[in-house]
Length: 160
Image 1 (cartoon, rainbow, N blue to C red):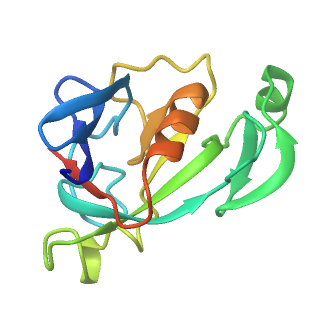
Image 2: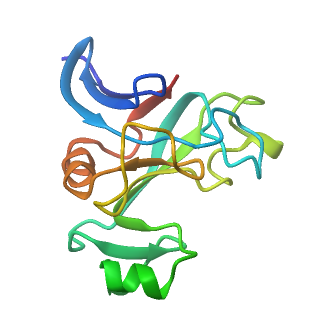
């Protein structure tokens, strides 16, 4: 059986979960508003091959708020959003990515892992299908739960 992999298609703003060449699942996403790029501090989505380095938030309730990869104990709501308008909301589950291409997305000023690039849930009112994140890949909460349950640590992720 072919290995499971993930393809993040920035042009179509879709994430596909693949078994070999077969598409198992397809989700609408949002990548970086600043476009593609690997430099630290660029707020861009890094290109190339990555792997899922860590899965964070297993069994957390949908809408759970994470800050620095730790659950705060809060559940996202519009009232909470108005209380903290500056937050970049990371919700429900986190798939923390690690670059696999030395000098491109791994090491130095282009290190995906050290840039804290994730695939994660976001508030339901955020419009997906249009680049709008700070560098990460945003998904609906129901979709990140589904993807989280499909992938394992080490699953290959290609962003193009």
